[in-house]
Length: 264
Image 1 (cartoon, rainbow, N blue to C red):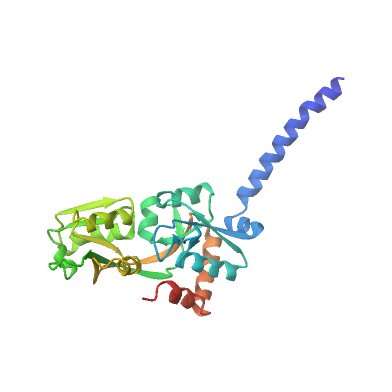
Image 2: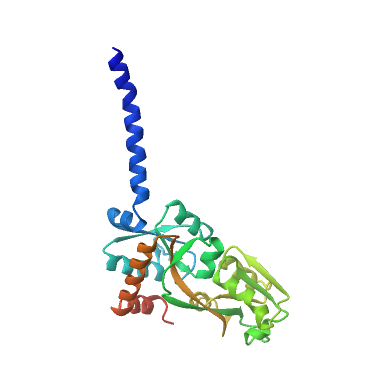
């Protein structure tokens, strides 16, 4: 009887030890090894920035980010899964393991705002930050004309980096109003609560196309690189992503995706 009781007590201990060793083995595997075993690349993405990413009429995520991510996945021999994530939670979610990488029109500056402890790919796109204003606006023809004006911008974005750089050019705004989403800046622009909004060129062109009361001032405030973001220390994954970026740039896949979504 005593032997049986001891045996029963040992069973939970064996299970616990097995779990601990399994977790240790997973931790020992780098993210790239885990991705290979899973056979899929889970991509964190915020679908609120057309034409880079948005939900279509069938509520599915589509846009440049999705097609670019799938092109990388094809090169890597992986299924690509897009995971809808709030912009503010992209880096934190990656660090928690909710997704493997971030492909969401993110610049190094934006990634570093969220965490200094990340890896980044080589740049795959250059994003120009430009001005949108009302079509009736006659006094804003270049970025220098933003002096003394009220500017709207989405916070924690490349556009915010661009707006904050204006003072270094000697351009001092009357006020900078920071919003959670670009859509909110557009509402206030249309209603006259801000004089101009700074956004990426592709987003600006998509927005103005459906709004005749808005116009683009095509004088870039700043140009910023766009990168794939990975967790700090995932050097093998970073190398694989970089190799895939170079491949899609050379085999025509990137040009095809660019022509579909970003050719204006």
